[in-house]
Length: 415
Image (cartoon, rainbow, N blue to C red; front, side):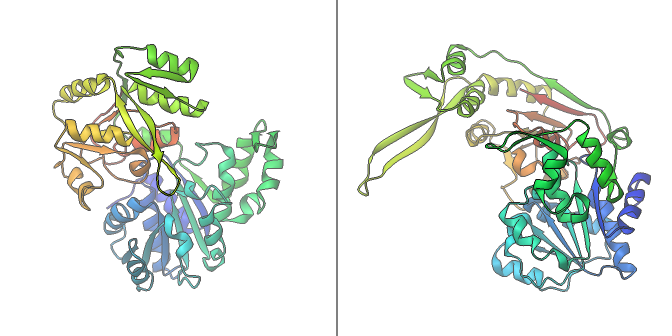
């Protein structure tokens, strides 16, 4: 298969650098770019074996498919699963071994690889994290280090330090404190509140530019069909409990008094109530061990948002549709309401079946489907039953269907 011109430029960029990052929008083909560069590196004797680190579902559902498509000359093993399965993959002679971030701290010290690729590099934004520290100890074993991300600064400039450090310490230095002192102003040291100085983003990007291939959104997005985002509104039958929760941190729902103990809890309660339900915590009597037990259940008082979802799906004329949920209770209601609904946990071949057009409704959570999955071949419609708080997760989730390979206009409905 042929790459696009900008993708060929990115392949050359990686090939010419042992330490590099690809910063490109969702769906720009970062995996394809990297696999072509890896194949050329092996062909020319620069790096024979590679370790790829990615989110779990990307390990199992994306890289195996992309290897066969873009670098069929390379063999691969997936080091996901039980300890025995991971050991077998790591001890294999495969050109590429693919491991998930959750197992980074379980890798042996004597890794026989010349190159490492960090897919979704933002997973290593925290240099104080356990997995970061564990893997950082063996980084010197990898002469070649490449990082891929579509959301480099989505949660703030402070996050770029860890991402750069794991690729190349020379980019922004070894100490985060020095990085903060240079590019930030401390607002509240007790709470670790640092705000970027004026022009800090431009200065940081200029400093790391020699090792960074930045694909501007316009270069790629102009080649995609349009993405139409429509905000759908519906009326909540009784707003008084919602307004009281927002005002007083407490509300009466049915016969129960629901209380929020903090501003953060209020925010979560309000998001739930906007959907017609709210979690309530009930404490039972003390058990024989002297411990009070409590459990959480959902109190439903309206189905207005699900009625709206019915209308949206009817308007979609039964087209294959992705439904995005954020709470377990929403998923339970979806399963009750739509018996033909599938989730990503309903089988190893769910993504394949979706892309073949065999699944009409697929429910996904932003944290499990927000990165890496290719879902553009199975449909072009998405409905957010509720929105995630993270802009990065929202953009990444939309990018599951609004990406290269999508041939139709994408319609995203937000309830």
